[in-house]
Length: 355
Image (cartoon, rainbow, N blue to C red; front, side, top):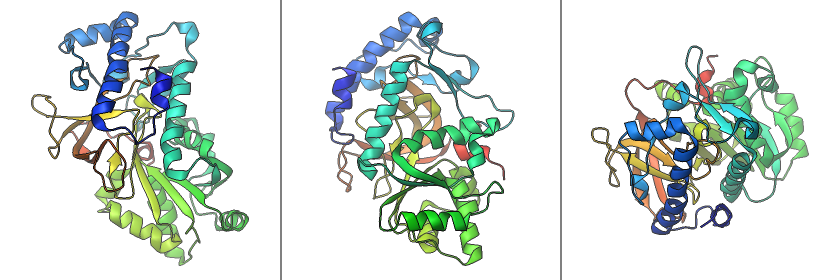
């Protein structure tokens, strides 16, 4: 199994047992590479129990917080293509991720394959529920700007829906909609931003935007909405009221494994693609949980050649709902998130916005 072989697989067409074999082969080779090339990772593996085995549940895992404390790198300095930072509110530490060109390309291709399976292979007119100033504010760039740039490769004729004052720019959006009349369009934004500055503003104005042909992809910011008692169902219902949009997909992802996002299907379930896997760990002994039992989310992907981010224990709680049998027809595991582990820092792109 090679990386090219893996990326040729359908994003959600591989049964779980076969994916265990494919990913296990790549991830075990990757573990040995990172132990040889990254002394800090090798030391961490020893401190955390030096787990060894061929199964995915036996691959060493790193707590995501470790990426905030040190820069873990498995390539020479001269091969570094870019450094990414995760989102974080003022005063919080951010993760630092080192990429070479090969890793950046793999992660981009992975994102293209996953998102393309939901929106099709054609780039769509794109409406971004944010202000254009987000790309010029260095304090916001790593959190929201990077997400916007990542998803912008799926869009054409990109238009920002909000003004610098974070109010809907209805004239500009209206002109954009006229130009895209009859076409499917892509709408992207961060969950809390969409709810506060788009949905609520439209509701108060009494105006409605014709986005019936839209596909909305959104992520992050659920903590703020849950504090306001806004459920996923209420979020979708509200958007349907003010703009008629019915195709709404949440996603779960993180800077530590850029590209390998977990998209929400039409049934409201988050899915692991063919290029990544998810395990749930018991919060007492870190054993792997069976389907239906809540625990801490572990994410795995081989798309982390330049840094040892291929097996990460997150700070999120979740439950595997089923394997290979989601009514949407996608193969692999599907799951839901249930919250944060106690004392975990708030993470997520739109959680950095305090407006």
